[in-house]
Image 1 (cartoon, rainbow, N blue to C red):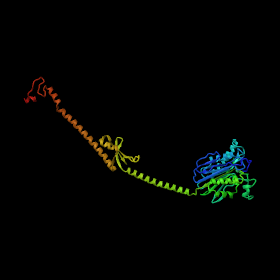
Image 2 (cartoon, rainbow, N blue to C red):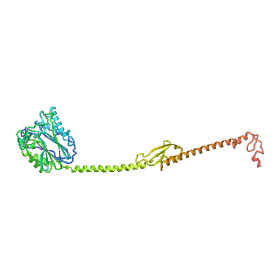
Image 3 (spheres, rainbow, N blue to C red):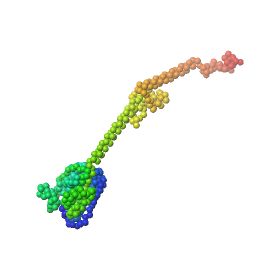
Image 4 (tube, protein in one colour):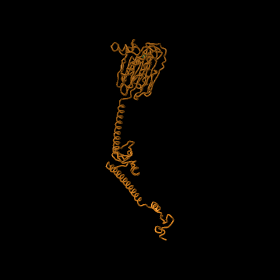
Length: 443
Ligand code: MG
C-alpha cells in the first residue's frame, strides 16, 4: 500500500519473531495462538516500519502450520487495528488442515470482523487491510488471499509468485499495458481493487498447491514486493541459509531500496519431502498389522483355552441339590468357563460331609456319563442309607414290642412286688420264702 505518512521514524525498530515451528508466535497481533502440530516446517519472520512511515500497520501471524500477513490501511490507529483484527480472526477461524476453501472463509470472516470493528469504534471508519495466508499440511499448502500482499514459492531455486494482486496495476499488467516491473513503480500501484473492511460480500481467492522438501514459502506485504524486484527476492531467498536469515535479508533489501512502506516478511521452509510421511505411514501400517496379528493370536489362544476349559464336566451344588456342569469348576482369568447342564434331585445335605466338601470345590468328571453315574450312585447310596435307617428303626421298634410281653429288670421286679414276693425271697410281710429265694437256696 502507498506511503501515507511523513518520515518520522528514520531508524526502524524491527519486530522480529524468529522461531521453529514448535514455537508458535503471532506478530504484534494479539491473536490467539496455539501449539503447532506440523514438525516438518521451519520458519522465520521480520516486520519493519520502514524508512518513511511513522508506525507499522502490518500484522503477521505465525501459528504453525498457519502463517499470514495483513497489511493495514486507514492511517494511524486504524490500519494496524484492521490488520490486528484480521489476523486475530484468521487465527480463530482457520481450519486445522490444508482446506483452502475454509482458509478463504477465514479471511472472509476477518473481513466482516474488520467492518464490525469499525462500526463498534475499534479503529476508525474506512480502515481496512489485505490478507495473505498459507496453511501447510504435509505436502499440501492451502493458500487464501485478498489484496496486494503476496505469497511466493521458491522451488528448486526458481521463485514463483502464486498469488495475484488485487490491484489496479495488476489489471494493467494482465491487459498487457505495463510490465510487472513497471507496475512496481507505477504511480497508481497503491490502488487495490479488493481488500478487507469495506464490502461485506468480499470473497477471497483460494487454492491448494503441492509443496516438497526444500521448498521455501514467502508471505510478504507490498513493502517488500514494491521495493524489491522478484529477481532480487529470488536471489536473496535462494542464498539465505535459514528462513530467519531469508526474512532478515529480504527486509534489509526493502530498507536499502528506500523502505517506503512497512515491510513484513514471513519465510517458511518445507522440510517434509513426503518420504517422512510415507515412512511414518508405513511404520504405522506395519505396527497395526503386527498388532492385528498379535491380537488374532491372542484371541485364538484365548478361545482355545476357553474351549478346553469348557470341554470338561464336574459336579457342584446348585442351590440345595447336586448340579451337573459342563466346563471347569475354576474361573479362567475371572471368566466363568462353566455352564449348568442339569439339576438333579439329589439333596446335598443328604450326602456325607466329606462329599459335600468335595462338591463345594467341584468334583471333576471324565465325561457327562460319569457325572450321571456318579449322581445315580449318590442317589442309590442315599436310598440305601435311608432304607437301612428305616430298617434299624423297625428293629428297634420290634425289640421294644418284645420287651413289653416279657418284662425284665425293673418291670419283673415290679410285677413280683405286686405278688408280695421280692427277688431276694423276702415276703412282703417280712417272711422268707425258701423256694423263691436264690440266696436262701445256697444256704
Ligand atoms: Mg503496505
